[in-house]
Structures are given as structure tokens and as C-alpha cells.
Length: 344
Figure: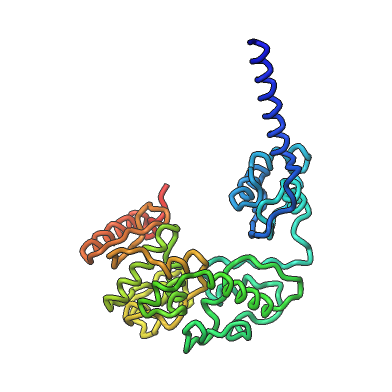
């Protein structure tokens, strides 16, 4: 009996050891699958942090085994920061090779955050030739009219935010071409049936998404903010979203003055009903999804939640909204006029 137990234990140890070695050295895993993902490795990140980033993005299957494999190979200090376009399901060895090789020196990386307007993207295009503002007025690669934008003055809203790698010396028109292609690819995945039933065009959805992108700080708020916009449009109530006016003023940081709040600009959604003339930035896929599929609520108002780390409080009545606003203003006053969005 004792011999059987020992034999079984020995078999378990052998199987476990075999599993561990196969998991670590991955003899049956290649350089990755067909899907790709953009990964940013921050400067100064240690191997543990990098492993977490890669595993969360699906590049490698385990952050633990990636870290162990890296340390065993003696290359912990050789991983280079940068923005990488990697395949999903890579072996640890293939991922290590990519990160120790680093980003090609003859490549310019342009990373565009979600929601930025054309003007805000301009400083991010250093290293490329030409005027980004001029290149984004119109392009042969996308016709805004096909999305219901009859009077679009430029390509605002269609310039998909992502990380792009271009050869040194490339023009901004190459970047714009890549952005428009990425937009068509991503927007083509969106089901617009809900918006169409409410007589909204694809361009209207983009416009709503651009406002959602500016207002939402946490992912769960996106469909809720979109629902407020839909509900106000339905009830013919001005949207009252100050980010639309900020877009017209090209001022995203300073407190709005009373005179500015009375601006006759069509982007002043306090004074004009309906949507602004067009997008106020270039939204990412999550905000576009929220704009196409808002939450089903009766909310008509929202305001920043004190100490909510970016979350908002939503209300169905003006009285409730005034109470929420009073709490926000009181918290702001206690902080000397600074936003009470984040608290220690």
C-alpha cells in the first residue's frame, strides 16, 4: 500500500514538474496569433509590472511565468520602454525578444489619447512633416457625408485615437490616412440600430460620443452620460454640456466666465437646443459604443461626485440635481476652489 502511495505521489510530482516546465518554456507556443494589440511599456517599469501589462493585454498567458522566464534568462534589465504593436498569445521568448530589441530607431510613434480635438493632436505629431490641421480638413480616404455629416467643416470625430508607428520623415497625411482607416474598421463594428430608431445619424452618434468622452472619467459613467444626452434630446431640453463651449473657445482648463457662458456660439449647448454642429473631439471605441447604446434611464442631470475619483452623480429631477450641485460646490469651497473630484 505504501509503495502505491509513493508511486502515485511520484507520478504527481513528475506531472507537476512537466506542467511547470512546459508552462515556463512553452515548446508548443509560437510568436503569437493573428490578433494584435498596442502595448505601452512605461519608462522605469520593472519586470513584474511589464509582465502584468503584457498578461492583461493578452500578449502572454501569465505574468508570473513571464517574470520568471525573464529572470532566468538574465534579461530583466534589458527590457526597453516604448509603444509596441505585439501579437496576442506570444510565447515568453518571443515577447522577450521584442522588448529587448526595442522599438525600431527609424520609427516615429504617435500616441493619440481618446477625446482629443484636432488642435490638441497637433503637438503630438512632432517628427512628422506637414500641417496636421490642413491635412484634417478633408481626405480622399473618408467622406463625412456618408455618415450623415452634410455640413462637416473638417474631419473632427473621424480621426481615431490610438498609437501609430510611422517611418521617420513620414507626412501627417500618412498619419491621417491610418487614423481614418482605423476609424472605418472600428466604427464598422458598431450596431447603430438603436440610434437610427431615434432618427440619429452616424455623425450624430459620433458627436454624442465625443461629448461622452470629454465628460466621463470612469468607464461605468459612459452609458449613463449618453442616456442623459438622449433623454434631453427627446424632451427638447438644452444639453447644457460645457465641454462643447470649451471646444469652441479652445480652452479646456480655465474656469468659464459668465460672459463666455452667454456666448451665441452654436457650440454653446446651454443656449441652443439639440446637438452641437459636430464632434468636439475624436472619441474612442468605448465612448462610441456608449453613444450608440446608452443605458436605459430617466436621468436628466449629472454632476461630479465629491471624492468620487472621477465618478458622477446622476439625477432625474432638477431639485435632486440642485442638491447634488450644492454638495459639489460646498466640497469645492472647502478645497479652496479646487475640484473635489479626488480626495485623499
